[in-house]
Each structure stands twice: as C-alpha cells, then as structure tokens.
Image (cartoon, rainbow, N blue to C red; front, side):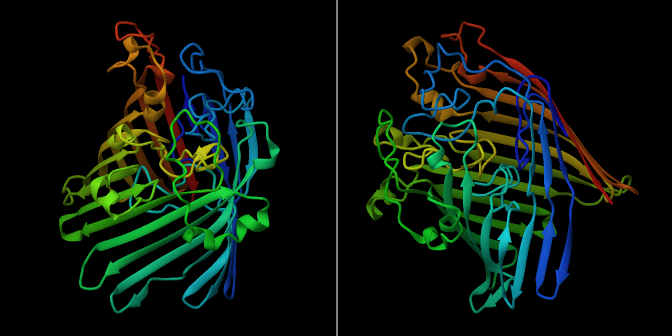
Length: 457
C-alpha cells in the first residue's frame, strides 16, 4: 500500500501506478513442479484512488495535439514521443493482472518458457537502464541459461526475451498501433582468474507490431540494426517509423572481506556513426548509473551492521545536443509510444531525460533494519530544455526538482515480514510551473508518501 498526499510518486512498483491518494497491490498465487516443467501462477490486483491534482499549466506547456489523449504528456508529442501520461485518467483505477506468473521448461543447461513476471537487468539498486520492475511485466517468451555455465574464459549467463508491449489508454485515439514488439538479449561474464567481478552487456530493440504472434516470436529483432531515427530536429513531429534500440554495458565488483560493492551501468540510445564518431563524441546519447554499498563489521551491542548505499543515475541529454540532433532516453521518433509498458518506462524509474541521486544509512540486523535516506530527482529535464520559454524564464529556477528525505524499516515477525517507507519532501516548480521568472513563487508541492508492505510467512 502506498499513500501519496499531494502528487503521484510511483517508482519500481510494477503494475501499480501510485497516484495521489491510496494505492494498493495484492499478489497471491502458488507454484507446482512436474518433472522438468515449473508453473507459477501469481496474479496481482491493483487499485489507485487516482485523486485529482493540478496538471501542467496550459499557458506554459504547448497544447496536447487533438490526436493525443488530454492526459498524455504535453512535452512528448513531437520528435521525442512517449506514452507517459501525466495522469492515468480522472477516475479510480482497478484491474487484475497476470502479475509474476511463468511457465518454464528445463532442458539441461537451458530453460525455455513464457512469462509475465518482471525481470531486473544490471547492477543498479534504484534504477536499471534497460529493464526493471518500474512497469508491469509484459507477456514474453524466453530462452535463458538454467545455471551459470563454465567456459575456458570464465562463467557466463544469458537471457533472450521476445514479447509484446501494450499502449496505455491515455496516449492516443488510434487503435491500430496499440501493440509493439520488443526483443532483449543480455549476457554476463565472470572472467576466469578474477574474484567478485561480473561484467555484462544488454540490448533491447522495439518496434510497432501487427499482432501478438509476430511480437512473441521476434527474437532475431534483438540483433537487428535500427539506423538513427532520433537524429532529427526537435521540430520534426512526424514519426519516421521502423525500429529503435537501447544498449548498455555494466559491471559489478564485490569485495567480501571489506564488505564493499561498487557497480556501474553505461548505455546509449544511438549507435555511433563510425569509429571516429565514437572517439570524438563517446558521450552522445549516453546515460549511466553509478553506485556503491558498504557494510561494516558486526556491532557488539545490537548484533547488527551499519550499511551505506549511494547511487546516481543520469539520463539527461548529453552536451552533444549543441552540435547534432539527439533524442531522449525512452522516447522515440520511430515508435511513438517509446520504451514503455502501459504508460510506464520499462527501465529507470525516474523516466526520460531525468537524473537522480540517492544516499542511505541503515542499521541492518538479522530480523530487523532501520535507516534514513535522501533522494533528489530532476524530472523530465530534456522536456524542459526543448520548450520555447521566454528568455526571462531560462535559468536556474526553471527546473522541476524533488528533494525527498525519508526513513525506512523492515521487521521479520512470526507471521511474516513487514516493511515501511515514509518520505516527506518538496517538489519545486511542479511540471515546470515557474511563473516565468526566478522572482516568482512558482508552484511548489510538499508530498508525503507512505508505503507499507506485508509478506505473510
């Protein structure tokens, strides 16, 4: 259950969209193993009060085109297009989803199957560039290694998915383009002769799809070329069609003796034009996540440990936008709905063109933990920089920024595990409502967000 007092705040909560008010997700299910076949049925029921809140000021944001739903993003109707509703309609939402369900067949070192469960790719804890549980798990077929496979140069694991992405009801009025296909391929390697090091690479390719059969069998699409669909001026609002792609490299290094872990993920939305292009501007269309964790020695009085976590994610446009057209993470000029499932980004929870920093200090014991954290998010910065503001509005006061201090805890009891997370912070210039100048008050909201989860034993 998540309660938001003034504004939506919905990060990494799969099918749930935590709007203003009370939001609930209940998952219940079971599993059975019959020889090499494993079935898990774990559907979820989600509900959102979806209470009203002030949307973007129409005098600042350009009007939503008549071909788009009034709740669609007012900043993403041109070259940087994405299915990212500013609000999911005007009435309470309730629906039943397939949730974390799967049917897997084991064939020695390989598993094949079908699933709707979420997967998290990459080492990030708060944000993953290509695949996370921020959106609802999409229906897909899969082929993956059943266990780590030892080879002469190291130990590898691999996953290959092909599935379909569904448009939200709050994007446009064209029923002919509601389905997209997506194919993802990821590989990790623990190099021989190293200890605690894992490196990996992943690629996702998506495009409009005619039907579910085509979408669910689109495995080769993960290796297909896509060209450079985002290399167009922002003023070009017509979709060019075709495919779009994301690519990432990641690494994680664990030092058990020191209780330390460092990790990072780096990706691009556009492949280099040439080797020279990459050498000259390797940061073009890049995004990244960098993080670390450290756990201290056991404390004599509490029999627990102090843990420090820090993570920074940056998906804002690279400085190369000054020299050449550039897209924005998760938006697309080829696929109007972008890299989303039912209106939520498949990757980093902060969304397109955003950046965030997270710092936490926790006391972690066997049956309980308690800590505090601070989060800062700069939302949709790429949308802010492309708008035609008056000159007086440009500057340090025209950004949409949240600062969220909070506390969190977890306890294991005889009846199950309970966790809670509470934050109370400020969102400055909500939806870029900066009143035109830095001297104006803008629109600042203080949102209180409480999340409580129960996992019965």
